[in-house]
Structure formats: structure tokens, C-alpha cells
Length: 269
Image 1 (cartoon, one colour):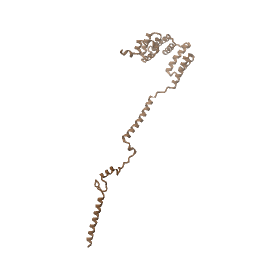
Image 2 (cartoon, one colour):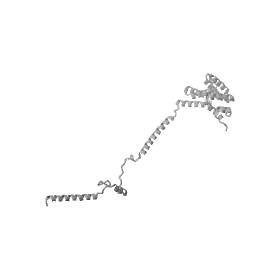
Image 3 (cartoon, one colour):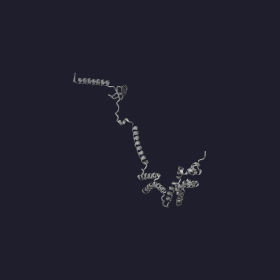
Image 4 (cartoon, helix red, strand yellow):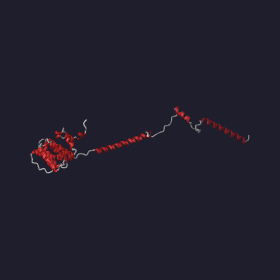
């Protein structure tokens, strides 16, 4: 056999071997649904997962990703609401906070109460000294000052000391109240009338005169003066509703029409 014939025979044998190897490889490796070698088909993968042979891989997530985003937003908004309400409550508490009472006011009230106790115990000299001290030291506390002046006049009346001549509306009014508290109604009325000569539209003098008129039995005068006092200051109506000095007039229709006008306006049932 010549050399050319040997070479042809060898090449044919090699191609036959290659074809056999290719066939064996194609038989051993299954074809995928996409047609690519070495890949498992989608149907086979699903059947393996369903049978439990192959477990699907879980995707690792962070801790924050486990909480739904709407819950995160809700918790954030709740925290912000709590902080905002705390701020509002604090500000409301600050606005509603009442101003503290001044130490001067507290001291003046304590001294006034002590002086009144001396007056009720009929220790008039000591009470007079206590009221004079209050008038001197607490001139800025108007309410306590006015009450102390009235009680001082009462102490002087009890002692029998000659009172200074009243000159102003306040002097006549304070003396009249002291006289009224001491049961000297006629003298009280005189000083109230003198006070009205200085100031005819002084509502608290008119109210005191109405109360004194009622205590002395002058009911017509009491009604006229009370009506004038209420017309100048409507708040006097509420004072008269709870004032025991007007007890003789409580059932009088004229008094009711002045002090309780709403009762007269409502029609009877």
C-alpha cells in the first residue's frame, strides 16, 4: 500500500472516532428548553422544586427590609406626633400658668386678718394700732388699704376718740361705713349724702345709701338709690342678689324687677 492511501485511511478513521464521541456526549447531556447545552430545563426545575428535591434559594434581606415601608412611615409619623403633642402640652401649660402672688400682698393680708381678730376680740386700741400700721406700710395694696381705713374708723368710734373732719368723698364714705357697721345708721346716712354732694354719680356711695335706707325701713329710698347704683354699674345687681341688708325687699316685686329683670321678661306658664 502506498503512502497516500494510508493517509486517507487514517483520516477517515479519525473522523469516525470524532463522530462517535460527539454522539455519546449529545446523548449523555439533556437538551434545555432554550436549546443551550449544560442547562436544566424549566419544567425539570419546577418538578424538582415541587417534589422537594431542590429547595429554592432565599434572598437575604437586611433587618430594615423585613418591615414594610408603610409601617416605617407610620411609626415615624407617630413619633413626630408624640413629640409635637408634648411640645403643645408644655406650651399650653406655660400659657395657663397663673402669676404668683407677691410676697407683699401675702404679708398685707396676714396683718389685716390679725388686726380684724383683735377688733372682734374688742381689743380696740391694739386693733387701731394694727390698722394704722397696715395703712402706713401697704399703701400700694389698694383693696387691703381701703378695708383697713374702714375698720380704723370703727376702732376710733369704739374707743370714743374724736374723729378728724372728713373732707373728700372717700372720707365721708369710709366714716359712713364704719358708722353703719356700728349700728349708727342715721349718722351713716348723713355722711353718705354729704359724699353724694361731692360726687352725685358715685355708684358705690349710692349702693351703700340704698343698703342703709333698707336697714332703717325706708324701702322707697332704698329702691330708688339701688336702681341708680345699678344703672351706673350693672355689677351692683349681682351684689344686691346676695346682700343680707336687702332682706326686707327680697319678696317685693319692685326689687325683683330691678335685681332680677329676666324673671319679669319671661311669660308665665
